[in-house]
Image (cartoon, rainbow, N blue to C red; front, side, top):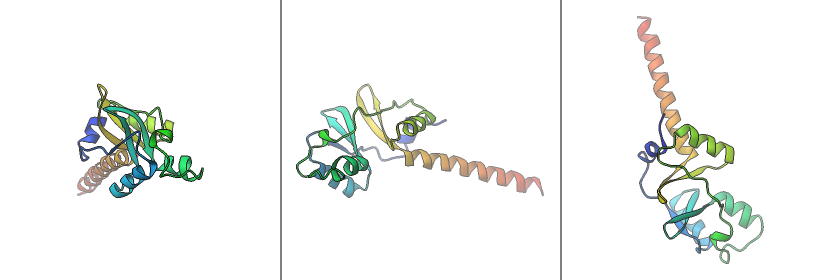
Length: 145
C-alpha cells in the first residue's frame, strides 16, 4: 500500500502556502491563479492551519464579511489535520473521510513536505484498479485461446 511520501513523489514538490496575516482576498487570488482548492497557512516555518474554498464560502461569503478586510488566521481551519510521510494511503483516506476534509499536509519533524488531496488518492486508486482490470482481462482472454 502506498504511503503519503509515495503520493508526494507523483506531484510537483512545491506546496502553495500563505502567511497567517494575508487577507482573504489575497489568499483567494492565489488559489484562483494556481487553480487549487486550499493553502497551508504558515507562521514562519510552522503549519498553523489550512485555508480552503470551503472556508471562503462558509466563513466569509455566507457571513457577508469583506474579504479585503479579513485576515486568513481569523477564518482558517485550525487545528489542521496532518500526516507523516510514512502514513499509509488508506489511513490518509480514512482521516479525510472521517474529518470531511479534502487536503492533508504532510509534515515531518515540524517541516512541511507537501500536501496530498483526496483527488491524489483517487488517482492512485484508479490507476491500481485499471492495472488490475487489464491484468484480469489479459488473463481471461489469453486463458481462452
